[in-house]
Amino acid sequence: MHTTDIIITCMGRLEHLQQSLPLAITQQNSHCIVVDYSCPENSGDWVENNHPDVTVVRVPGQNQFNLSAARNAAIDHATGEWLLFIDADALLAPKFISTIFSRITTESALRTDPVNADKEKMGTFLIKRKLFDKIGGYDDVMQGWGYEDIDLYLRMERAGHLLYIMSDELIDTITHSDKIRTDNYKWKDVNLSRGINRYYARIKLDIETLLRKALPKQERSNLYKALIDNISKTIEFGKPSRIEIALDAETYRDIKRNRTLIYQFSREEISTLLAAEQ
Image (cartoon, rainbow, N blue to C red; front, side, top):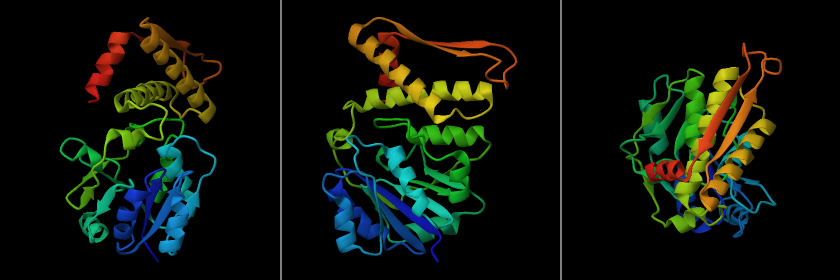
């Protein structure tokens, strides 16, 4: 019986998966799950032909990559106590799992150091399955590259769960360009993509903090669409735009009085935000 499910997602990254998966399957007390997210290279077929003990999850019919949706798709196939999420370009040292667990005491989730770790290793995340389910998994409303991990961490912290740091000394990565990173995303600028997702996560957190509960998926989808529409117009036309979110006490009984949240975007503010992400 394995204790950890190692989850790797792939869309157009078969070359990387062919290097990372052989290292992942050697980890002690673990089982690998590969999510073929409409991969144009049919990564699932390659896995089944070369590593038949690995579980393959296929998500067909997708034109753009959604890391959150891809990672969530693996959960129903996971049976271990722990979930280890890694990117297709992450190369684990032979004793990664055994070394990490030898250092764990009561921690329920570990991430790489956001200050000192190589940013290429930020996609590595270890969490107990029960906690992942409790938090609600990744928010698959988010599109494009970046910030889906921070969004999950913020929700964990809001729920009172501590997030611990794992050493990245046992992780290496395959060097590649931003073009490869964003080939299967709508937005090709990683800073723009991450900036949009950062705005969304922060606004969503404001709303959920006031309501003291998570927003349903449809409301999150509406918020994300409104945000994209407004930021796109600001970037294209250079004119300020704004989003108004009305929270009335009759609909949302957890708030004592009506509130309206207003977020205004100018081209300069967006440029400042995106520059800060670099």
